[in-house]
Length: 207
Image (tube, rainbow, N blue to C red):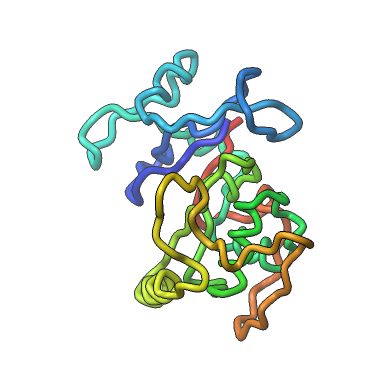
């Protein structure tokens, strides 16, 4: 199972979070050679973890019982920033869907390895045609980079009508893949697939 981390205050025994992807034949995501289902409801994690009582705990920071990953059960810690670096360096890791091309256009425009990251399905390699783009900004520089991105109307424009993919229409490449890379002044450290990245921040895979 893959957990989405909640907050930045965690007890010594667990990392707080809820089940985001779990094995289920009715799902529409492929992970680790199996079919997984996405969960977007925090409270549903209690049912998914009904046979894992060690994943229930009281959090004084949250003020209630919540789910979490016992630290000794963590297999992989996915890094938002290092995954963005990996996708920038190896665009073949992105799927060839319209939203995958959209994300690559954003990465090329905004790329800054230390202040911007990608989360959601692209973080763990569970993206498909129904995925959206979830970016994370870190600190003041990340905030300014995100503001500049949303002010760049050649890349981002407002939702109009019932268009399910309103962003990045002007930047999308429709005839070949991958799109040309934009020269970057950043010097990102090498990184592989997100599943093999060392711990910094993001999601956890539990045993």
